[in-house]
Length: 217
Image (cartoon, rainbow, N blue to C red; front, top):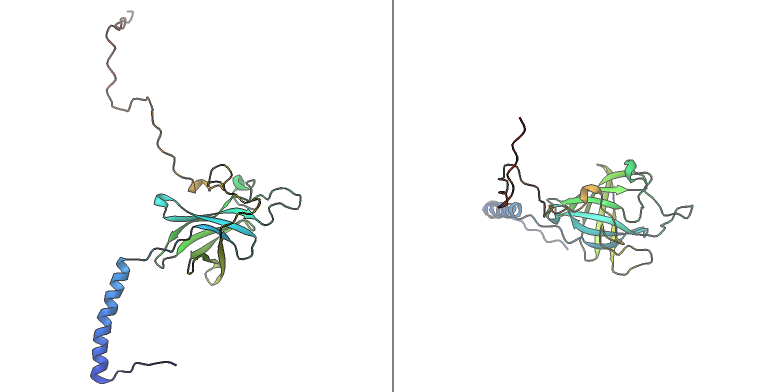
């Protein structure tokens, strides 16, 4: 059953005057306090069951979202060898193992409280636009678009168990997946350098040190 509010004459005008300021205030409040995306970290099984993806915060101040393949249902090729990313357009990456590569490429939060950016598909060596968000605990909605009007969504479910062959080590550490070069954590500045900064005064000579001999004429 549908209930419909009907206002006529002065009542309608009064209702309009009351609703418009309220809507305007709500809009201003929303603009100043954009909602943050729901937590999307963890390990998730893809909808087709062929891979498990570890989702982690990454990038400056960990505001981005990165994802890595940590398990493959079929990790070996027809020759019984570990699958590699041979279709990657970057020749330096074509020999890297498919297990452990980065496919979620540093998504950024958008105004709709979702993450958006690029996802890499090793099956064709191409990157596509993707939007990821969570509407229910333990689930991610992943919407990928080949072009603006050709998009498809799927659901990834969070898992907590560990399967044989699954990478469990820390990202970029022993037994873990690997970040693409542009998403590697920044290295701390080197310390303990003995180089004298430009413009700095040189240290005074030690007491008793022999004076330099004058140059021969």
